[in-house]
Amino acid sequence: MYRARIAHRGLRWPRDPLRFSRRCYVTDTEVEKARQYCVAQLRESDHDSYLIRNLLLKPKQDAYDALRAFNLELVRLPELVSNPIIGKLRMQFWRDAIIDTFAGKPPKEPIMILLSKVISKLTESGGTPNSIKFWLLRLINTREQNMDNRPFASIAALEEYAENTYSTLMYSNLATLPVQSMHMDHLASHIGKACGIVAVLRGIPFLAAPSQPVRCPNGTSVVDRGRNPVLLLPLDVMAETGLKEEDVYRQGPRANGFQDAVFKVATRANDHLITAREMLKNLRAGQSPGHEYEHHGEEQHEYPLTAPGDYDTKRDLRRGFSVLLEGIPASDYLTRLEARNFDPFTVKSSWKLPWQLWKAVKSQQI
Image (cartoon, rainbow, N blue to C red; front, side, top):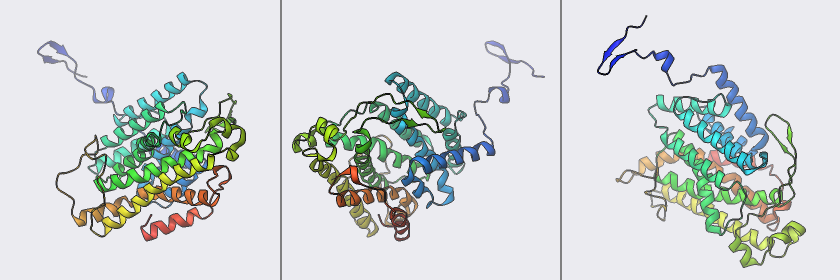
């Protein structure tokens, strides 16, 4: 039986550590079910990520699976909700889930359960998970701002979107390893921008066509709500090439200026991949990456004042190389897009991608 203690404001009861504990423990069985759920989501809805996770060392898979499954939930959310208010509520649910999970109180949701396991292991090994929380909240905020699928005003706006989504996802993955390196963040920034631009190009055949019934994770179909077709190519590129949205909706790839606009946007994505490859080559040779990191000094992009030594840079490249594998599917898509004369409507899936990823792992090249 508890005894009351004397305090300066009178009597108060001692804290019961079991009753007042804020930590929500999850069992090994729950973690295993959560792991299976996340892997199944990637296998069914994000084949590129599923291929990559199978090439990762087992200790790295849980973090990758949780982060990619989380991103997948945010990506398909606009197609699963009936109106913007519901969409904002769902985004707030995920925002609260992230905050609670990093506070040690994960909701009974598979992705958050697996993420809590990742956070626990990272903390036990002396890592600091706060940066992961920052990146995931930024990812939610950016996805929420772009739920209405508004066209990007310029190609620079598209790059900013890619930085705040795909690059941000790569930053969070680096933080789980953990790798804190300006050079790795710089590489992730360029590759993430390429991935974000490629995602927009890959989405054209789906978003520019009338909406189809959407299948939920549990297998049920959501009734088609008549989404209007959208074209997310940057408006400045469309103006430069004389492309009109209505022409794409009516004529598809035959619209005047369509393939020219796709070419210009794809070229920007390819430029980021070329820059990343050149940086990787220079860094491994012990040279300067070639240009300054534009996000240096921003929040969570603060690094020690002393420049990393040659050994430190090569060590970070080895530890974080798996994160850079995201550039392989992007490069593969751009190659297939070029072969189809920059017509996204006719690009087919690639049977070579698994081999290309395996080759990249063996050669440590992107």
